[in-house]
Image 1: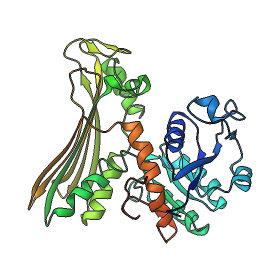
Image 2 (image 1 turned 90 degrees about the vertical axis):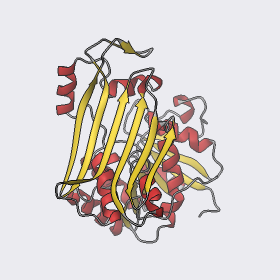
Image 3 (image 1 turned 45 degrees about the horizontal axis):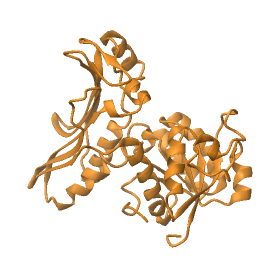
Length: 335
C-alpha cells in the first residue's frame, strides 16, 4: 500500500474537511475519491463548489455505503465531532464498510481513561469488522503527546514533563478567536467555561497517553480553564478587546502521582499582537531538555498534515481495534 496511491473517503466536509481535501490535492500518494456530509445543503455539490482550488469530479453524497460500492476507497478520514458519544455512533455506522478510520475527534486520541466504556465499545466494533480506528491531529495527537514522547527517547530517567503551547490568536481565523472567548466580559467567559463552550479538548487525553507510555500510574488528572484578562485595550483586526475583558484563554492540565505533579500541560491562546507563539517541551530527569518550536505550529495546517501522514502507519498496523499514536508505527512525512 505504501507504494500505491491511497484512496480516501472523506466524511465531514466542513472547513477542516475542505482543508484536508486541499492538502490531499497537492500530494502524489493520496487522492480523495468520495465525500460524505449529512447536511442537505452540501449534498449534490462538488468539492469545487466548496473551494475553487479543488476539482469538480467528486460530488458530496449522503450515503457512505453507496459511495463506497462505487469508489472502493482504502481509508476513511472522519472530520466531524470532538466528543466520544457522537463519534461512537458514526464509527459504528461506518465500520461495516471495512475501511480503517482516522478521525480528528480530540477525545478519541486517548480515551481509555476518560471514557473507558465507549473506548471499549469502539475497540470491539473495530475488531468485529477487522478495521483500525485512530484519533489524532496536531493537538492532541502530536504537539502535546507524541512529540514529548519522541523527545523522551534520549532519557534514562524522567521526573517531570512540561508541555507548553502558546498561540497568538490575532493571526488565526475569527471562529478561533471567538472560541477562546476574546472580547467577552469575564462573567460571560466563565459561564461559557461551565457550559464547555470555551475549552481546549484533549489535555487530559495527552496527559494520560504520556503517563501510560512512561509506565506512570496517575492518581489524579486536573484540567482548569481561566480567562486571560486584558490589562489594556488590545485586539485583532476582527475583535476589539477592552481593558478588563477576556483577551483569551489559559488552560492548565496536571497529572499527579500521589501529591507530586509529574506532567503539566499549559495551553495559552490570546488576541495580542505582542504575544510570541511557540510550542515547547521541557523534561527534567537525568537530562534537562528544553525543545522549543519558535513561532509555533499552525493548528489547521498541522492537523491536516498529521492526519494524512498517519494514514500509511495506520494501514500498516497489523491488528484491528482502537489505536492511539503510541500503538501504530512511527508517523512521519510521506511524499
